[in-house]
Length: 153
Image (cartoon, rainbow, N blue to C red; front, side):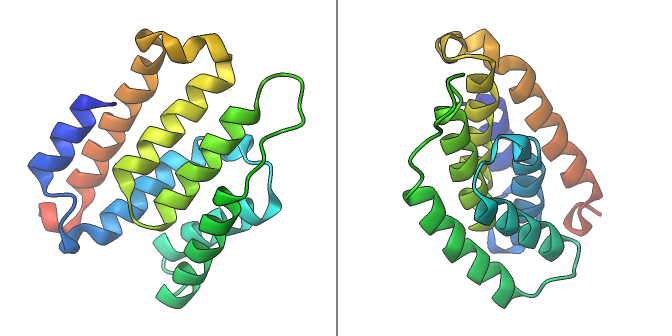
């Protein structure tokens, strides 16, 4: 768990309804970092819808449809047939995208951090230090998004 991120999110009131767009933008930023780990074409398409929505090119109905679709994809992900152990990274990345589309930014951050670290190798997830670079990036990203948010002005 990224305690610094959780603390920052609480201080900013990120869970409030007025920050939905910010949660989606942060979830998108996290999910984009694991895009290369996604194996299912539908997961990639749903991530594209989230990107379009955050950019103002897709409406709420498209976002809701993509959120429902990625939830189904994530729930049925069987892992990877790859011999490099990327199955868990792909599954976690897909779940991260599902949380991002649902507006659950901190959950998206958790899954995508796990996917990032697991992609190094399964051994890495048992070493808390392996998460530090991703956790630091997440905090910096959320700080940047908060600073640029109209609510921050």
